[in-house]
Image (cartoon, rainbow, N blue to C red; front, side, top):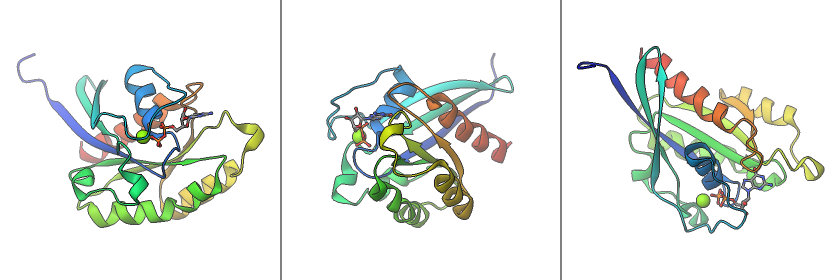
Length: 174
Ligand code: GDP
Ligand code: MG
């Protein structure tokens, strides 16, 4: 179609080191999982297309590529983002405790409204769970975020997590 409308949304993934950010992205964009992924290896972003209301929507999803180990992600990373996945590891409480700090950093750097999803990743690790589903939900409610638990390992809810954010962004602008 000649004048089909197109949308391009920038989405960032943030959260402590090793919570599974890079694997969530590779699982969503390429259906790949890496058991021994290196923190520093990673592309800047991947683009995924989907159709909403007959319109092509492209999500440009950014990965920190390891910057978060230095506890600071550059402002360029956040610039223009309209969506964010804030990820913690359900088996490591320190990563959950960091969520408010990540939200604060996101707020400081974003000038527009950002659709935010709190993501409790590694829900396959039920045996060593440290954060209950309820606790995740309560934090999300308190901070006004969507909430979902995922597993990049066994694929649980990965597509859903990204698509809820993408649809929310679309709904906000259309
Ligand atoms: P990042 O530093 O946040 O980008 O985390 P990575 O994606 O590099 O993952 C860190 C480690 O956690 C790697 O060893 C992954 O294999 C592992 N990992 C990532 N997602 C999951 C998951 O859903 N379940 C389990 N069990 N391990 C995961
Ligand atoms: Mg990474």
